[in-house]
Amino acid sequence: MHIPRHNKITNISPFGGDAAGRGGLVIVQVFLLFLPFFLSAQNNYQQAEEYFKQENFSKAKPVFENHLKKHPGDKKTREYLGDIAGYAKNWDIAVAYYEALVNEEETNANYNFKYGGALGMKALSISRLRAVSYIGDIKHHLERAAKLEPKHIEARWALVEFYIQLPSIIGGSEKKAIDYANELGTISKVDGYLANGYIAEYTDRSKDAERFYKKAIEVGGSPHTYEKLSGLYEKNNQPKEALKTTAESLKKHKRNQLNYQIGKISAQYNLEPEYGIECLSQYLADYSIKDGVPKDWAYYRLAQIYKNLGKKEIALTWINKALADRNDFDEARKEKSLILAL
Image 1 (cartoon, one colour):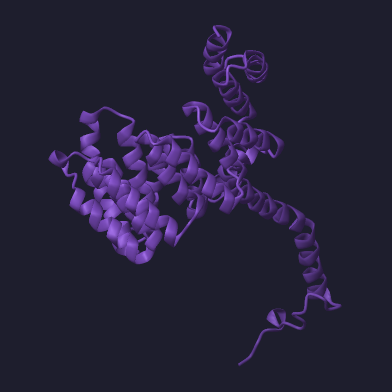
Image 2 (cartoon, rainbow, N blue to C red; image 1 turned 180 degrees about the horizontal axis):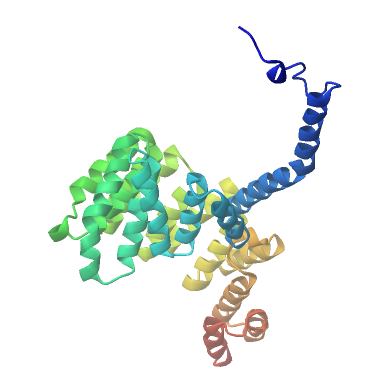
């Protein structure tokens, strides 16, 4: 086959010495010139993902929004923005993102779960009459997520809550809730026990709930399992059992937040004041923002304990510290009035 001379390729290497090679070098130089911008955009996105993992959404959101302007079809970015809207309880925005994702990828279990969940949360934020119209879609997408992904734990948990909280007249069913709780048990024993405990607690079967939560502790023993049992005891006016359960969790897990919980129970129910003071002092000594409960609440609980002990001056010292940290602390203001009345 004859190749015309003006089309003949003499050198395709970008590093050659002729004109084609010089053209290749220009391309390489241009690429190297813009490489820092490409890397910067990539690094910014990765940093935004780190911010997202840290729940620092105010920093992550503008990066994702800017990325989406340039890449409007990027599903992961739209999912991130839907999640951020959900954390902020902007349910209309979250629903819009997830609905579009489900429409594009109907067999994605996670999109169905998030869409159904966001619809459920929106339904809780509006009138009951309007909320009824959402029930069919909520049920459809949550059940679809569970069907698409046989080991989707979150979808099954959502269905447990959906069916146990929904009145039977509009589709609620304790039996269906238990069925999904038992499905959870085949995936994760501890989740199965916790879900059945939740159902029993919701339906005022406290003995059954206690039994299930104790089994969850035996199988899993996570801080959450102890927290559920302790919360049940508090709800049923069994503060000694609540204190004992939380103390066992502290001994096993060494989580500083548990020091506060022990102090709170001690203060509220006037139990083991010295132990309460010890735990609250430890909480303040080891405090970090990750512990969740601000220091002013620990000061408030110490004031309560000293008030219970009849030590007015020490109680006033701690309640004043709480108010110095936060002058609009209404609970502390009320507590100060009680202390002054001693």
